[in-house]
Structures are given as structure tokens and as C-alpha cells.
Image (cartoon, rainbow, N blue to C red; front, top):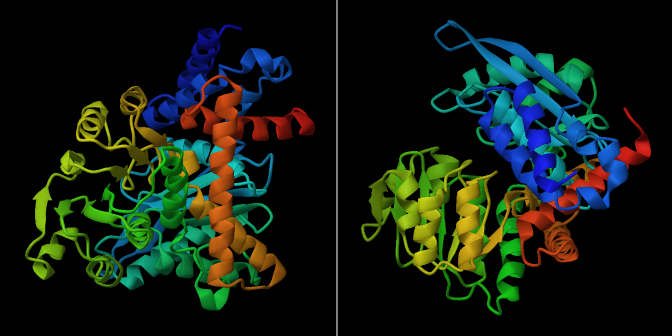
Length: 447
């Protein structure tokens, strides 16, 4: 089958079965276009329709979440868990609590998770879940009641050897704690069923930092291939949550100057360098807005319109907020301003048109499923420690994380080179991840 015929065939089926889910369609198309390059080289997989099977989740669970707010009013939200693929291990992927959540978003994230997890070199499959519940502005008591109601349904579908959720947007240490407490009560077991737990009750050191640190480690390899490093580089990072904060921390430790961060209200620019202690206070303690930063630093500037952060000239850009935040125009602006490397800290933050601009301009580009895999990789390390009833030191977990990110980079480079796309880490990541999952599925038969 010719490459374009393969892509057209896959996409016609996916779009017919999954109408109104553009994020999922975009994610499938990107991987399909990469896999199409090797489809004639793997006729046995084509005959077994492995890729078509991967695009269909093994299981989708959707459920009602009823809870009572502080005003004694009954609220109703919708919960999701999409268990996408378990060919190489138990389902693994985060829970997202955000008003934008619907089935299509969860499927897009779960599909991406399959290949991301395969690249980590750890035995974990792919899944994702969440709810359209918005924890912003809710009291701790309201969040607790929601989480308890959510887990009262989810618990029957997960387990340490079945499906191991973690956090994502809107699900941090507070939410994981409430979810774990309810799971423990309902099952009368203390297991590693969730990752991102507190250090006192089964969590792992470096887990908070892992996605941001891992992103920096991956981009370090990209920079090394260009004959440079972080020292003296101006860096712009979108977002100001967990990924952005710890990417900032590690980049600064390596000699970079991070000058901009954002949230949904706008972005700050601090040319002499972001003061991370201020950001941590605002975001991790006060749960405030990034605009408050200028109250503590009069030489910083706050601007409304978070998408305009990519107009700030920089050497390295790390989009770490949300999907499709960098479009073609933003990519052109980054490239024309001299940006040499882009590493995706969020899931699919660059549109296909933006990725093409980066490749055409010679900008090194690290795709999300490779560059931001540090979080789930460290979740897998947390699962290992839970199984052994051990706790590794910060230094040990960080060493393993750094090695995993380096191994991911090598896999992407090797696959890209092997199939005639040297330097194209998007193609390399998609092919390397696909082949690992596909070979496992072939070995296990048509199930």
C-alpha cells in the first residue's frame, strides 16, 4: 500500500468512528504519516492491521461524578478513563481535571501516551483519564468530596498491575492524596495504584521535578548535537505550573537565563532572569496568578494575551502549557528571532504547520512524546520502588531519569536515521515507539 493511501485509509476510519474529536485526529495523523514510511517494510504488521488496532482504545470508561459543594448544592461532572494499550505493560497515564476535558481530549492524550511510554524503556502501557471538573477556586473540602466521588467509580477499573493513574493539569499532590485515600478505603489495600504520591506514603523523590528536568535533559542532547549547551542562552517557557517551574530550575542551574513564563491570564518578561522563588510562592503556595510576579519585581513586565509569549526573542523555547499553543505564525516569529531549539514540555503544543516551519528553518525540535516523557518515566520508577518497598535517593532517581532521557533521544535519532529521516526526531519518536508496541502486539496475537 502506498504511503498516502495508508494514511488516507487510516484517517477515514478514525474520523468516521470518532467524529468531532479534532485533537485525537491530529495526533493519529501525525503518527500515521511517520508509520507510513515503514509500512511496506513491515508487511506482516500491515496484514495484521496493527496500526488500525492501536488507534482503537482497548477500553473506554465514562461515568457520572456527583458531589456536594460547600453551599450544600449538588454538582454533577463527567469522569473518563481511556485504557488505550496494554501490550507492553499496565495502562499508565495521568488524570486531568479541567473544564476543557471531553472524550476526544482524553483519547488524544491516551494515544500519545502509548508511544511516549514505549520510548521510556520501562514496561508500561498507555492510558489517560480525567474530568471536566475545575479545581480552580474550589476549597480543599470541595476538592476532597469531588475526588472521593470520582474514585468511588474509578477504583473498580484500576490497580497496580492493571492501570496506574497519575496527575496532570489540575491534579497535583492535593488531588492525588484525596484520590489515594479513597482508593485505600474502598479496597482495603495499600498499593502503588497511583503515582505522584507524597514522600511519606509511597512517593518518589524527583517526581515533582521529573517532567521539567527530563525536558531539559532531552534538549541538552539536542543542543550538544549543535555543538553548544545551555550556558548563556535566553529561554522562554510557556506555562508556570509544574513542568515550567522545574524546567526553569534545571535550565538556570545549567547556566541559562529564563526570561518569560505565562499562565492563562498573560505572560511576564523579566530580562535579567526569572526569580524562581517568587514563582514558586505564587503558584505552589498561594495558587495565584503569574501577573502577581510584577508586584515583587518592578523591573519585570506583565502582558495580557498568553499566546503572544512567542514574540519574545529567545535562543530556546519550551512550550509547556497546552496543546496547539504554537501555530505557524508563532513558529515563524520564533525562527526569525533566532531561536535554535524548541522542546515540547506540554502534550502536542505545536501545530503540524509550526513543526514544518521549525524543520524548514533548521530549528532543532524535540516532540512531546519524547521530550516530556520524564514525568511518566519517573512514575515508572516510583512503581518499581513501591513494588520493592524501597525508596531511592534523589541523586539515584535523577541519575536514572537522565539516563532514560538520553536513551529516548538515542532511540529517536537511530530510528530517524535508519528510515532516511536523519535528525527528524518527530519521525524517529513515532517509528521507535510504534515498532516497540507493534512487535509486542504481534507476539500476543489478535486480541
